[in-house]
Amino acid sequence: MSKKIVEVVEAYERKFNPSDTERGLKIAHKEIAKKVKSLIEEKKIEPMKIDMKELYRKLVEDMDLEENIVSSAFPSISGEIISSVIIEGYQSFPKDVEKLVRSVPSKLKTSLVAGWTAMGDFGDPVKESEPADEIIPPDEKTHTVKNHLYERIISVTKEAIFFDQTGQLLDRARQIGERAMQKRQKIIFETVCDVNSTSLSNAVLYSTGNANLLTTNPLDTAGWEAADHHLTGKKDDKGEPIWVFGDMPVLIVAANLKSTARKLKLNQYGPLGTANLDANLAQNAFDYVVNPYLAVSNTSWWYGAFNRQFRWEDVWAFTVMSRNGEQSEDGFKRRIINQTKASFYGGCGAADTVWVVESNA
Picture 1 (tube, rainbow, N blue to C red):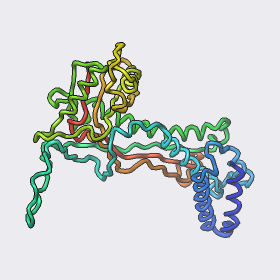
Picture 2 (cartoon, rainbow, N blue to C red; picture 1 turned 180 degrees about the horizontal axis):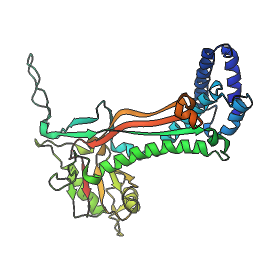
Picture 3 (tube, helix red, strand yellow; picture 1 turned 120 degrees about the vertical axis):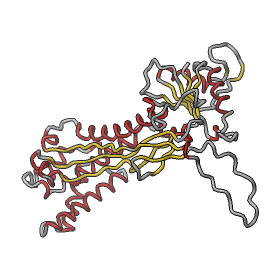
Picture 4 (cartoon, one colour; picture 1 turned 30 degrees about the vertical axis):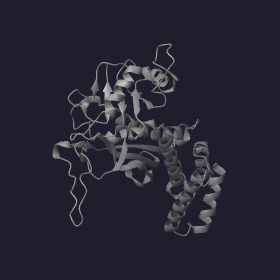
């Protein structure tokens, strides 16, 4: 891997003849970084198999550039490699949680979201030449979603390169990407399960007053049927069915209820816990997701059309940026070769209360 990158560096430095001007050097390094990025995207280079220490030796030490690292291609190349590893870690993390929300763009720190449970039907036929009625969500059905910035930086120092014997540098970069996606998932899980009662404009989401809290059935055949019937009969404030099962419903459980959820979904016969040969009506009638942040003793479960009730707002999606560390005074003092910043800006909240029920029997 290192040999292929060195060949790219040599070819581009010859092409742009950077020894003549500082500008030529910068252009060459920019083009080299673009080429390395292209090779990574085309799967011709595997970032996790690159020996950063060996690459540093060939591009810096062998070129006698240790006192002037910014004159080498190493900072630009290492930034591209680390960025790609961070992104790969982010993208490869399990994404079951994504089915629980609908993602929407946003440009606000706090968004005012309109609830749509009181819209009623589509109205009477419109006569020719007459204007159509406008559907305006009532003010009392609006909720807020607060968005926040999440950001971390990884710095590559001379020491990190020199003492990296086992590829820990790139492994840490991969973990940054994973932790970013994990943070997003934790926010979503806490929202859809209403941890700390922050999902619905800082009001309790699941309650008897909102008609979305069931307290009599544990997770079994009878419990599933009760939740399913409850949601099937849901109507908006004007008495119109909301058709909650337009999408495949989802069941959220803690780890200790995973086996029960799996049996309920896959068993051919039911009810659970009996020798009854009646058909299991729950078979393949829903998807399930395990919430790893719930206590293993948690017996509560949630069921419904989550992505109709919850939204994730993207002020900006996951972004990775790099810069040469010695471009800053602090970077010079700390012998930073490259800094890479990973960030996302967003938030999650409930737009309504009718699409999901909680059962905490």
